[in-house]
Amino acid sequence: HDIADRGHDYYMENKVAYISIDRNHGYAIVEGSEPYEVEFDYYEGEISNLICSCFCSYTCKHEFAAMLQLRETLEFITKNYENEHDDYFAAISKNIFMSIIMNKKESGKISLGV
Image (cartoon, rainbow, N blue to C red; front, side, top):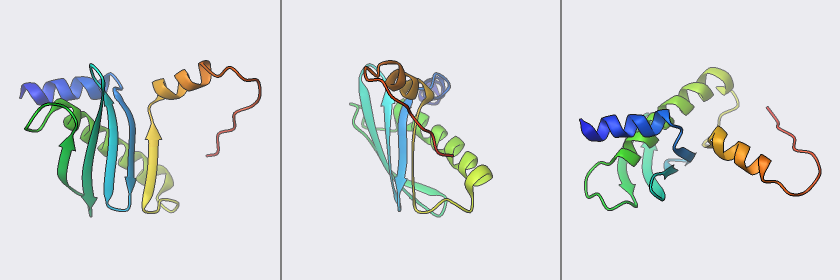
């Protein structure tokens, strides 16, 4: 219960910096005391083989946060881009995106294709 609560907090605090699925393999980076890598398999709506780079030998808050983010991202893609979605997607958090933009030292333009 405590792990789920803490993972939910990480999710709500936008600590899932990156998440992707390439065919049936998923990958996420969750910001904790350091960036943790979460890997998983995703096939026909089922998640399996969750692995996190943290010290826990059981399901951890990073994995829980990543799975909540996965659910939200897939719902968004299904609702808005169902006909354009293939076997791959990648997303970064708004905080990471803004950090990249604000730290950009060069002049120029950034275009977002939607």
